[in-house]
Image (cartoon, rainbow, N blue to C red; front, side, top):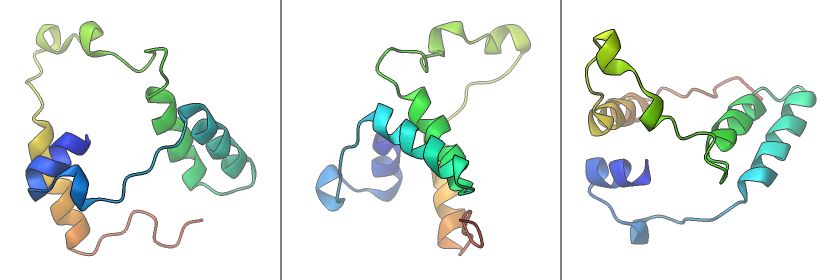
Length: 97
């Protein structure tokens, strides 16, 4: 996903302040937040779980899009739409903990 954002925004890693957090820690933090009523913890634990190093989040080989008649998704197009929505002022976390 960072690569798509770089292509859409015409940036590189040098333009961002990039940090690292272990997926297992992020998952546990998300669980704790959710347990304490902080609903954004749900997104944190779900997204981090997909990125666990054991490969559980890798579903590309299992996709059945062709069988279902679904077209190929264009990540950069979806990224561009998302950036435009956010630049327009929409905040998915507004009013949430």
